[in-house]
Image (cartoon, rainbow over all chains, first blue to last red; front, side, top):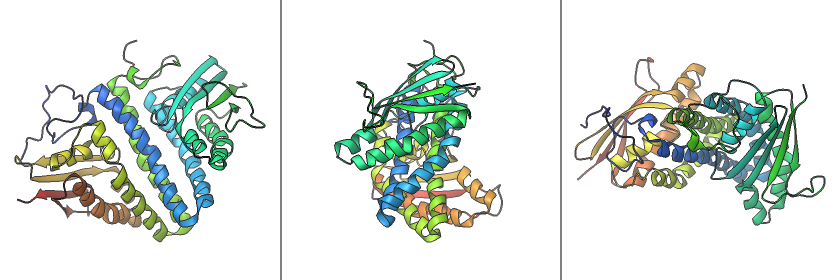
Length: 203
Length: 187
């Protein structure tokens, strides 16, 4: 059998193309590899949801699948938002924390496979989140499935963005500034922005 | 900008993953891995409550079967792992979000690479099932899913790999290992 101990002097691995290490922890991987893996983990997290959605839709139809998908997200968001903030080491429950979660949650800016996010803390009581690329929205829009775009963007996202923010700070208020499919009551459009949100703290 | 050990400092609108230190990235990876299995767990819980155990079992099998068929390529490519042998299979287990974060595993590989032994010493999923006394979930994960998925995953790497569980839950004591598997390629 191969030696089970990882050599202490081993250099960090740029990938895992070399020999198998009987004991190989994430810690043994180099930073670039970890960044790559973080992207893959975030993608896998999203795909898990997609596969469940498909399995349920096949049995009970799209309407039921959507209903359950929404329930699952709403139940998962608070704990995953807090888990993300904890992993980031941000201790305060404040607007900066909400924006940081948006930057690195694996169902948000932490999943570059699907999204690009830009965020701005205008002052301690006002924050802006711009989704400059939303692959799911573009995917369904380009397929002409505007019904689902409307469900995702108009029905789900206002509640989900809020659910995530409230998990960090209960007295935050939020509203969409730009929201597909860009008709009433959200006709505003901005170049290079798929959707945009404002978070405010009144106290 | 130097490497950030965490994100407790000022908010940075331009911050990227690559700005973090390795330790910070590890914490994010662990969090994401837990969320990955947590999402599966939440779907299972909701479907089980709404439609019962049989539907949840059926959906879960289908989901993990799809993951097995569609999701192996990306991590193996991202890590440049390759396919074709037990070593490659073990590498995938070591970096997979459902494995690397949740389990403490020993891998042993023979010098000729034709025999591999995987011992899951600690499994957070099993500990969850035991803590909640949920035998149905234990059966789903350890029996219905793993007994089928592990051989199929091995088969993806090399159709000649034979997979055999040597030990599976339930266990009599928490001092026991969670499970143990052997993988062989016969001449």
